[in-house]
Length: 259
Image (cartoon, rainbow, N blue to C red; front, side, top):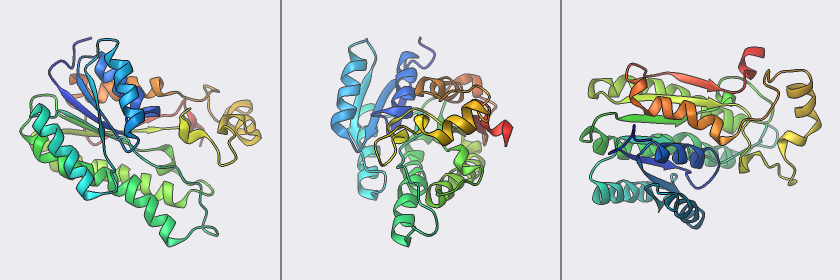
């Protein structure tokens, strides 16, 4: 419970879902965690709940699509803590747009958050991380959607695909500074992003039940949950991954093995 003691971790999109699951695990392991999210009130509530268990967790507001907001977050972390060893680029927006319904505005909106957001946050935090302590890690949250084609997913898949190669390129740039850069690529995970436009849950749809459960395209035959992502994330943020960089770890219940 103290393997990350003395380290500061910033998790974007940390108010809920995968980000909160990862933030909770990092805090459990002793890190001081900043849950950074555009939904500041939700992040505050999550931070208060975790603080009640003895964890060191605070909330911060950020819009990863805005340069000024991200710069303010980096300044806040430096002024409050003086260092940052772990950065988790998790914040993203969902999208289910195919080419016939897509506009360039929608495409650019998704890319601005899901792709450029990871770049923007990293750009602002790298100077602080370079002068921080041991065990420095950047973890990007990619997606299996960035590793394969899928209908009605052009903006999302394109952006997540870019996150995959951004991870590899950034790992090469930061290796001389002993900063490891990796990503996890989740499959289907039960988060607020799993809720469809009509209010239904993706897991309950006929296509999901038939293809991924009944016929075993997900060998484990279930949805993932944020805690399923937290373990692999902790590994890549811990000293156990000191010789791992530029890697994309698929955390998808085996779905990538069936395609």
